[in-house]
Image (cartoon, rainbow, N blue to C red; front, side):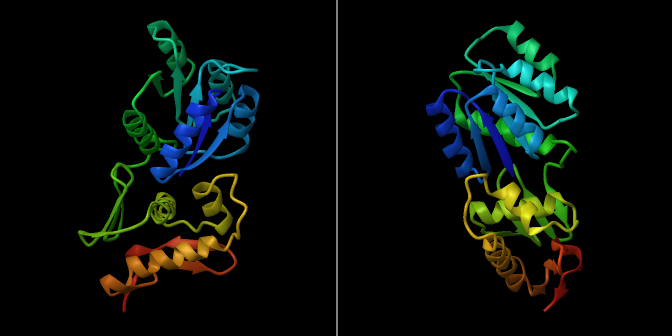
Length: 229
């Protein structure tokens, strides 16, 4: 899952980036309002963390503009102000949640998980495909009731495939949603994680081909039809 953070306090932005990466998200950062708006319009994010007081264009204007353009990515607004009218303004223009600084990262991360689950389109609390369960809230994966131990990045790849409900997704789409825009490595890194997921999702459960390669198109999570080995 990919998150945009628009925050002019560079220290806070870096803390958010490190914390969210630790939660398994890909994170893009910008410190200025206009660039935040442009990134939000040009890219598909699963959530946006948006400061109110920004140089160039404040968070209220950015959120309002996104909604006017038909972008309904969940938005969590941050502010140093503790006023009910500021909160009301943010929610009235289309924000989904509101956090006042200083805040607990644990609480903010929980709010982000809730927003991502609700998302657009809405996502179920637990994604179930066949005998596979993917729980974005707890970052846990189970197959046939047994827990599958995954790294944060492996879980992020699987969560994205599961969220697409069995649709074929390209390698580029996986890269865009699971890695951030600073990634300059080989795009074949996606294949490495797909291979790791296949080993963990199939062999221990006497199954095969849970993640199918669609030649020339990408990958499809096909758990319900994974054949016994």
